[in-house]
Structure formats: C-alpha cells, structure tokens
Length: 591
Image 1 (tube, one colour):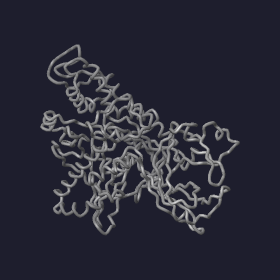
Image 2 (cartoon, rainbow, N blue to C red; image 1 turned 30 degrees about the vertical axis):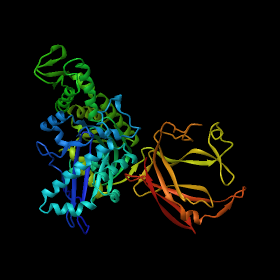
Image 3 (tube, one colour; image 1 turned 90 degrees about the vertical axis):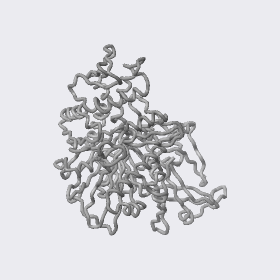
Image 4 (cartoon, rainbow, N blue to C red; image 1 turned 135 degrees about the horizontal axis):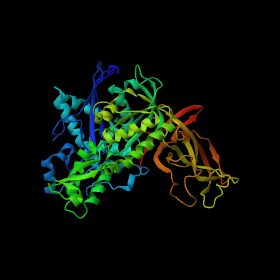
C-alpha cells in the first residue's frame, strides 16, 4: 500500500520496519523497506506454512507437546495432517491465550472460562514462541521475495524497528511483557528493546482507514469521528478530531479510548456453552467433538448469520438424524433467537462503549468507522447501523480486507506521527507523605500512618497526589510535573530514589489510597509502574540542615516529570542547580 499523501523517504540509508498485530484469534504481519528517495510501500506477509490459499492472516494458535515444546504454529494448526499428528502424539492446543495478558481491571463478560494453557507453559512463553515463529516466516518471506533478500535481512534486521499492537486497555505492564517476549524471540537483541514500539489497535486501524481511501469523504478539517475496532478478543473504541488532512493527516483524541473484553471469541464462548448444554449426555459430550462443532460454528454459522434469519445450522459429526436434539443429517438446528443470544452481550458492550465515546466527546462526532472481524458479521453490522440510525450517526466499514488494517496502520503510525494528543483514560498520580494537619478530620482518623520526619515535623502517608486528571488532554511532547522533597541524612550512601505511579479509574479520587490500618489499595486504584532515578547530583547540591536531635540532613527537592501523551510512559527527574534546570534520567519499571 503506497500512499501519494506520504512523502518520499528522506533518510540516507535503508531501514526495515516490521509491524505485528497479534490478535486473539488471528495474527497479521506487515513490513516496510524504507529506501532513500522512494515513497514508503507497505507489504503484507502473504505466505505461511501449510496455508491452503495465500492470506494475510494466520490463526494465533499453537500446539505443544508434553515437554512444553511448541510443535505447530499458525496455519499448520488447521492442516489435517498436523491435527492427526497432534492427536496421535497428544499435543495440546492453545488458543485465545492473548486474553490471559489482560489487566486486572478488564473483567471477562459472563465470567466465561478461557481455554486452558498447556501444562507448565506460561502465556509469556506462548507469546515468545509465537513471535519467534513470526520472525522466521518474515525472514523466509523477505529472503525469497527479493533478489538480494538474504542480504537485505542480514544487513537490516539487526537494527529494524518492531511495532507491536495492543488493545486500548493494555498498559505499561502488558507492553513490558510483550517487549520481553520480542527480545526472547530474537526480533531484537537485549540492547534493542527500545526499538520495540507499541501502538493501540484502534489508532492503527483509523490510520489504515485513512490510508485506504475508503473513508476519504469523511476526512475533513475539524471533523470528528469514532473508530470502533471489533476484534477477536477486545473491542476498542476511540473518538478522534481531524486537525488537518493535507499535506499530512493530523489527528487528536477527542474522547478517552476504551477497551471491552467483548470481541468475537465471546460470541463463540456463548455458543459453546449452548452446545454443551444441548448435547450433554450424548455422544458429542466430549472435548474433541465439541471443539469440532465450535470450529464449524466459527467458520460458517457465525459468519453468515444475518438479522431476520430464522434458523442456522452447525455441522456435527456423522449423518444421523435425531429429532429430539434438533439434529438432521448431522446438522444441528439453531433458531434465530438462539443465534441472537450469542451476540447479545458483545452487542450491548459495543453500543454502551459507543454511547460513552459520544458523551465524553460532547457528541461532536457523527460518524463511526467499524473494523475488525466481528464487524464483518452481517448480524452485528446491521445492528450497529440500526443503532446509528437511532441517533443520526453514520456507521461504515472500510472496503477491502480489514484483517490487515491494524498491521498496515501500525506502520503508518510509526512513519507519520499522525496523532498529536490523547485523552487520559484515568487519573494518574503518586502516593506521598503530606504535612500532618490536626484540623483535618481525615488526617486524624484512627489507624492513619503518621511519621516524624528528620526536620521534626509530622507527616501523614498514603496521601493521593494527582499529576494528571482523567479526561485531561495529553499532548505528545508535554511533560507533567509534580514537586517532591525527600529528607535524607547527610551521611546516606544510597542516593537513588524510587516511587510508584498509580492510576485511579473512577470519577473522583479520594484523599488517601488506602483504608486506615490496611495495606491494600482502595477499589479503583492500580499500581502502574515504578520510576527510579539517581539523585546524587541533586543531593550534593542541597543545603545541609541540622535537626533538633542534632542529626544533620538534607532536604532533596526535585520534580518528577512524566510524559503520558505517547503510547508508553516515560519519566525523568528535574532539579535546580544555581538557578539552572538539571535533568536526570529515570527508568520506568514494571512488576
């Protein structure tokens, strides 16, 4: 996909950019070989082992043997010979594993259970094995597609950038696990972790929609639209304001991005629960046969069902007719109402999310762009169009295969920097020690943690200090600062400083992060990351003070500076030396 809106690459040397969209059910991969003077062109990986016909996507599915070694990947897992070998050798199939990385604040709808992981195999290992497989297939594709492909890969892959997509709800902890998996898979070396970048699937999808030309008439200066990515596991919804279309597309978030665990697999899980109940106690009441029934549902009935259909059929083994079970010649009959019930929870979550996006954006948007596999369902699409008609909102799907939307859009995100600002999804802040206030009833609550500082004053701890408020605009280059001071004895040897950044996801944050006498956080609070920095220079420049006890100490005063406007949190520490601003690097770490 070459776009004449995109200028020729001005770099002096060739570069390789790889994007990988690991979805809950399918994975797509694209790359861009940047060559000086040429307009960047996006290429999809279209050849995968055991694939019957060329396709840009492969299943996010693996088989593991009893030793925990991955034996089959992607399209191989749908190959009949591989399936037979897996059954003979008792390999374990793993799918939908991506959802096991979800943050704790994203609950599973209906409390449906995900397929189990193989024994003694972690989700991080599955992610690593899957990325390792992707890497080998990209290498094979490039080396066989270009006349000098082997040289291209050998020269450029050691410095390539890898763009990984994430649902809107994934945060720094999930990004860190994905980065470690990319390193372990050999996509980048241990020192190349910063060349792994992250973009949300919704942001990549809206950039793909713009590049595709299919929503060109919707892209007008000062226009507003909402992108709804209905994927396999997650549904991501974000509102955008269009700041400019030419010469380059420039967007900003108009409403905070939202993420729901309500994608296509939850329609499948609801259907599976129905099949298990209908066929309980029959010859189909075992895991192998049930998996095949669900597979046929996924590939046929689920994809074809449309509003108004009164019946659908799912293939079961054999050609028997059992009227009591609704089976005719090996096909299980499902009524239209039963089919609709499978979509019900996901549809409710999607329309709820769309309405919240419009409310938070002040109902400025009048257009919804749908992408993702679930959006291609005739039933789901018609229901969302009908929902839009109620509110006078246009709902559209870009033409062409949307499976590559996110992978290609991730490349566009990396090259164009189109999104200039985002909206804070929650409150961000820190836990501090504040001067004790005898007149404040909350400070005087029994069980609050009070400590006397080296300066003789009393401080109360676990106080919430907000840095960024929920729904605040986050400019890409803007830093948010919070002044701090730390009292350290003059003879202290460790000058490092660390603090935890917290998120509060509800509307109005309380005064304290914890209940009295309790160590656990109040509901709504989550630990996001730990910022660590070296304050040696700041400590050395601070004045020496003497406490009433005679102990000498220093009041180390500095700012914690956070950048939250990019897709990853970055931090640094700032202080003054002789009226000059000095910055010290800080690392952001995750549990």
